[in-house]
Length: 593
Image 1 (cartoon, rainbow, N blue to C red):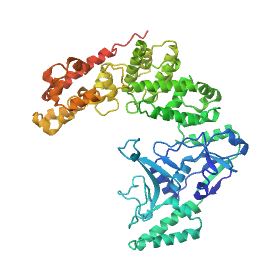
Image 2: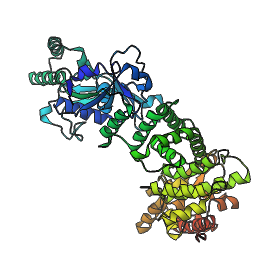
Image 3: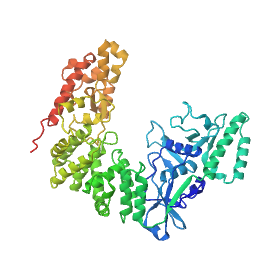
Image 4: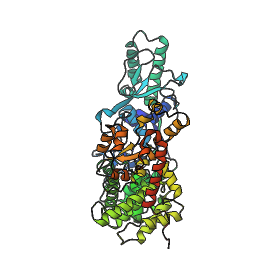
């Protein structure tokens, strides 16, 4: 096995003209800090490991989908585009080293677009496109200080992603590192350095000029002179052999996730469909084009494919054989339909990217709908309403009790067996699923311990909306927006308000401890919330009728509605919540016979 070595500039200038990506490669996942660390390693002369290329023979090119490297990356994921390789005489695919080569492309020729904090993704002003710069004035021998941007990641060179090049001032002379590609020969580079230094202000000291010259020389050496890219080229055209090489090259560390591996296998075996494009597009569709914002990923899709196809749930390379992959291919349209109907259903419960704490908890519902392809449970028939209500309760309890947290392959296998045995029945078998899950040691019911945990939910937690929703018998969660509202407003818990009510000492602490508890929370429509906020609290709560009190479990004793009785109010409401939960859920376990 003979390795070759070349400079970074030599390889980078042939990316997307000679070097491309096979469909089995996953997409770029590095963060800006990782790119900075990588370039710091180059500047320090550290080895960056070897690369593995596959040279495609002309007769093999039309057999596989080939992709371009990403040059301009956007936070949250940028999909690789299919490459047009017509007219390319020598074409090689990268089997190992895609992340490193993409980092080089972004740093030297591209950009990295990131979202500003506290801005919404759909706001154009939320995004900033940054390129990689080197602070030539920073002496790497001094090492990072606690004030440095890069101190925490141990970067010695002054590398930083920035939107634009700042004006040069002493100790802060930034240089966009991609410009180094313009100076191939030593003569061109030397002329550039002299002109660059002459163009600096007189305020730049002789010592700083030496640091600048040294940093530019090191950058030029790293990109043009040092043979950093050491690679082996595989020329065998047997795809099974190449796929095996790819798997072995990528499964030794953490470079390739299990879903990436399954996606690679599917991509290489499916005919008549571009699996990579199909699955990525489906994930984007679920997350961005339904009624609610979701945050599913290809792991969820891959796991669902295995479960819904009645295949081994655990990710193992030996399970991805041709027969199994063909099973998934034949069922793909039905799998997509079941997943979409499932996501639309849970979105109608107001369960979305914010409140869905375990995607695996959704998969048994998808399997149930997979078995009855004509059902959406979005209608108004008694059967649809009853079934949707059963599923909402089952899913909500599963999420609140973290039933599918941790290793859940065994749970998915067990619940699938229950659902498979119930094939032909249109009623969602919540009780039978719960019996099986309890057998496996998972708590799926509301017992006294679960109710106690329920009452510990606080405002701001992801699970709190789900907890509150279980107290209401709504059938239109997805069409009406509900706000989590403090019954006794937070303003009443400010120091001046508490002093006005003569609430101090230990009682002051108790008030603050209970302020955000579920006993002081309710779900209101936007109109109700606006009405409440527009009135003094005493006037608002005194104007509520009996149906409102019953619906929101407000204690009828009006003496508890005064802020100086808040502790007694919250205790009384906890009792009402407990009684509501016991009436909604069967506390006594169903007969397991």
